[in-house]
Length: 381
Image (cartoon, rainbow, N blue to C red):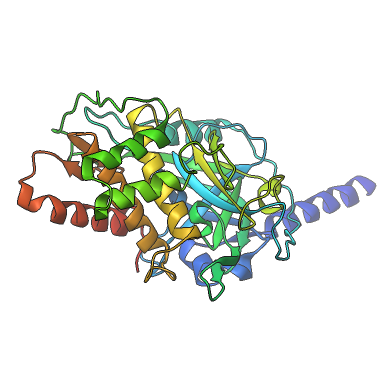
């Protein structure tokens, strides 16, 4: 009798644990992310690890961002993640209130399924030309994890200075983050790069320096100081500090790593001061961004820092779509400045092809960025 009683308790406890996991979808979460905050959820979805994405995709959700940011628990030390990302953090001298939420710890099940999932997402695309942060596979799976949900928001004062923000992932723009506990039913699908498969480039652009910031600063010469293009690339380079300024002195830090973990310390005050009380942590995965690819990524992220910290007139309320559009615009300028022949993006979108007729180049770049943002990143205005 006692044995049956104990067995009954075990079964009841197991049922209780199963009941704590909510079966849902990406779109249901994005309808009201705060209602899922702190809950364990199970979703079936497709994950992509692109240039500045590590997300569970939500096609048809009808949101400005139709993705959930994906993170591994702190200390996972796995391979997959975005190639580049920028996140804001309160500096030591931040004057606002900082009250990081206490979140239930997640322990990742490093099963055979997880190892397969992580390895597939970390596999780069094969390309004869530079493909910036391009993954070889999208991966579908059933995922269980803790859902962190907020209403992502950035607030500025009358002078345009950022005074508060909330959100996850790149640009702190995502309202939902899934901290992974387990995966199952892993299926991979090759990303279609047929649109760019025939393009070739020797990728031997000589920037004249191993410092990607200085390489972009030097790129200004290709356009001339005082021109719109020259000023834009100068602004992107100077976002990391003026020439000769000590790295990090302006609160912008370049961090190397896999950029794929949810760390509580990143939501608390940092250990450094900043001129405006904000640290801009720019993560760059050198395993996926070598030499010239790193130069292009730095131009992109520098544009983001400049647009967040000191927005130009008319862009004070720019959302993620506009910010990403301007980031890719800066990337294209870095390409042109160094005479690179071809650059493609995740999904096979051709951002630049030197063989395009001169009269079509500007329009082609614009259409490529629009197609990429809308179809690959699932962003809308």
